[in-house]
Length: 417
Image (tube, rainbow, N blue to C red; front, side, top):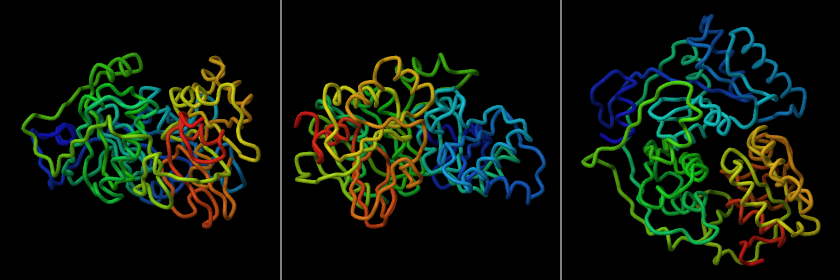
């Protein structure tokens, strides 16, 4: 079996599963946020449920419109807060100790290798970086899972992506996943588990692995996953509040397709509007003037991402008239970035540093675009109107490319500076 099949088999209480099987799995964690939880709470109540299956395994994170940007978002967050108090949820995060859901949950040890996690947010697939099966669901499915502690799946087939070769300077996990999506398309992994492996992945730090699995959904993937290794265990073990089980694919496991790429030939990537599959190598970008740069989000809001951006911005200034917005992924990351002097570097360069939030990624707040404006962002989607006006444009890239572009006032890489 593949790692995905083994994890689902364990959660279903079966010795073996195969692609196409329908299984009911016990869940290790159920997640919702301030956009999706209010719907889930309403459905939970309407179905007659009175208590969540386990207050320690149902998590709500207010991150999409926080700090509350208007009365409507404040009302939604209050619904989340009231439900969390009523149910005695042990893991409700809003301001204190909070941040972006897909960053803080792994950091707080709420997701561990070998577990099955669903979240009412499509980027729940992020946790596959830990060797967990994690996938997004609708709010109604989340409501049922909050009550029952289980849900059903059709076991997906798997795609295997083998990366070998040493990465070029400034090339990161963001570039690898953008390259992947550019090769297979936004529906190239539809309802398939995307398994990333090979020497390049083994050398990739956890931050890059989280980024890659985060964007599995942008290829239509049911999940993204990387088998745990020493890097994973070194990261997870100090955070783990409970025992966990590590799985790996069998050598004879079957895959729907196997892709093998030499990563040493991959240059920094940029996804052009209006799909993540519209990728080009940096050398093919041409002259693209931008109005805004956003560095952060659940895709690239980790401390390592901020360090990379600060390395580029140190001693430089943001281009006149351009807005560069830095969004740390959590309060903890924001604090550490302050201690390391990264925030000072950003402010001296002319950037704006936000509190942790999803904010502009979904066109919520903290950087919404007007008609005709262009932004380069480390976020995960660049659909029409994703960051504001339908006539705006979003280009996706790594923190290094976004930071360099902020300095140049046009899309470029650090070496172009």
